[in-house]
Image (cartoon, rainbow, N blue to C red; front, top):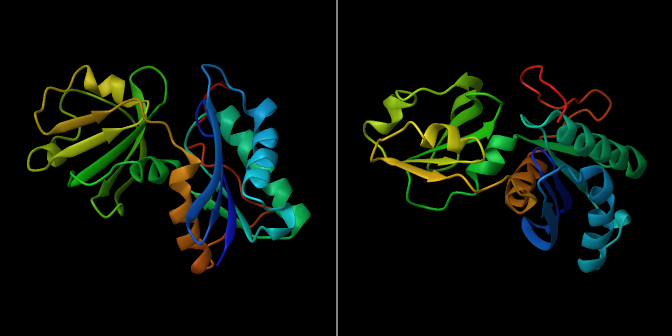
Length: 219
């Protein structure tokens, strides 16, 4: 039974959860318009540990959302996670941000396409099946009216994340379901982190870097 601290900072949502055996026992997040991560992340970590009646010494691993996403958010989250892993001598688990978004979708769609805003008409996207398994890798791509037609032609497709608004404006397909108000949250990391922990699917703390996918401006 693993106790894992989950950090999600890939977007404006600064989110921290404490999970035991894949179940969240304490949680704190703030999705302000600006990035509050530098000021709030460590405060949230302390508050979540207190709420969960736990301590740093009880942690078996740290899980962090690895991107893609905001350069600023990812850098702060990964730096905090690596620092804690070094200090506590515990493993680091990296969770793809788009997998966290896909986990936010309940039953009802054959295909799930999480999207994060990548500026202009570009999004970071991937494609998952209804079992939340990735069936198309993460890409940075410009969306058009015809985008994802091969999935929409025969399936109900849920588009989730803050990049969805760009596609929602130009997509008129009846099979499209839009969840544009959902942000990646540490609550949805717990089960994914537990699965990786059991398989010893961890990353090298010394060399791990966020998955930025492409160069872009800080912010």
